[in-house]
Image (cartoon, rainbow, N blue to C red; front, side):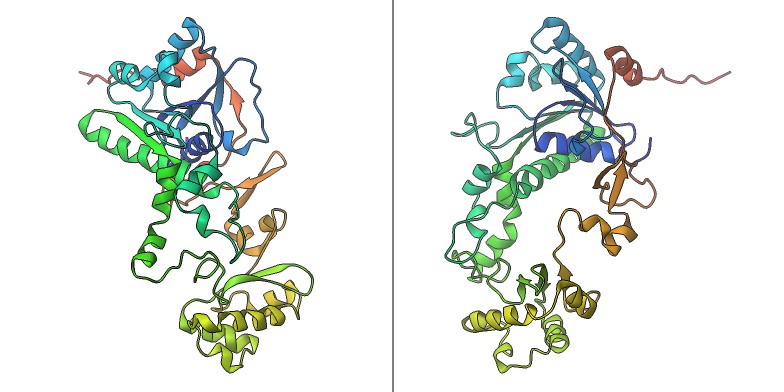
Length: 366
């Protein structure tokens, strides 16, 4: 099995959103992840977040199902669950019991609000978690309401990816101590952490609480997207003076209004001129002029276009599995590359236990 996490055994209790995405990241990197689902839940090949792992149906409301799950936990290095606080304890699969049976187990818990706090037991989704973290307030146009940034910030960035980091950190420590621990990954915590850069700007008085008026939130004319003559869009990110100068030179932005790049008072006039400028050519024409230069330019591609872009094709950023186009594993490893995505499949308890059974200690031959 390929990947830097080859040999790592992970039990995933099937849930929604960030927990499966975290399990997918580990499976991409070579971990042997076993996904436990309820009986009757089919394998869904089009659910990309379930790729590269086997699915085992267990009735966790029955004693035999719990015993089977615990037998797998006994052999696992890590566990991932994404239920509300207390659910795993009520099932008889809580961390106290599991760690008593397997002292080196790293027990990963993925929730929106965290395992404790006044909101811990409330329902919620990505939008709610990033709302109380401050992140949602900052996303959107000036004078308009906040815009949901899909579910990148809470579910996947602040949730799944930070859970993966936490699991790997705890697994690294367990190799030294022989002792596992619980990783409490809350999307509210993670979304707040992702805002560290913005809090730095705020502390220096360089970030306004007025959304759409700052350098990175669409307020700056040199860091925004613009409509082209064909109705498609381009993205401009020319922050540094030398990149801004190249953008001006290549686009013919000679008006003196562009001289004061960081003068916020000039931004509305600069943005109006840039909007008019980019509307004079098609997106492809702007690509011919600016793509690959230091003007910090890129075309805004949709889901169908992105896999066809020459840079993404050169890096094989997207792969095709049985007709399903999907993002390839990331990041890249020079010596232990991640394994190619595989379609999810099914397994039996006997097969899973046999695969995870510890190998007998080798004896020296005499």
